[in-house]
Length: 213
Image (tube, rainbow, N blue to C red):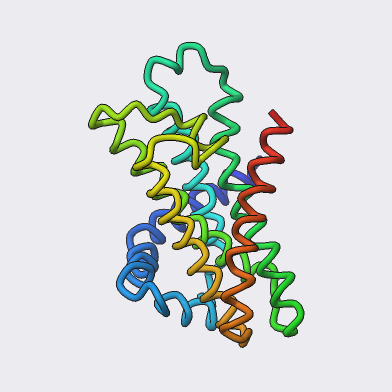
């Protein structure tokens, strides 16, 4: 108990420092140079890369958990706690599978380190967080988006949300592609492996959570 209490302020400081400094740098690299902005970060992972990955993954979980509660509107009265928890866990599993596939692919080059690949999974999850942000914004403007339907069948809903999901899917593919290229994997191979890895990560993440809940 004492160890936990002593480490808790330290973790809180790490989170505060990350969002005050490092997160801004990552976002700028992510959006200002979408083709190669993250390449250097993946090639030379920051010293606190693993901690940053944990913070991002945890933040996306909280965003999905709280966001699904807010976006469900009047439906929340009829929903169980497990329903919102499942929505929060889905992106976590997706990011972990992205990490796993990146690690397995890079292992063939001899440059794989699972802790370092957590950054690939975490940054690959940023577009997932943006999906929830867009969903909440659309709800504010009166769009009747159902987060449960969207995540169980993302391409069967409103056309606008379908376009948004496809757009952010391409962003996830781009992140994965930059990560593979940073390990010396040829561009052609990275181009083919990236969408397959992201599709499998999404499919496995959603399937596991649906079976758990």
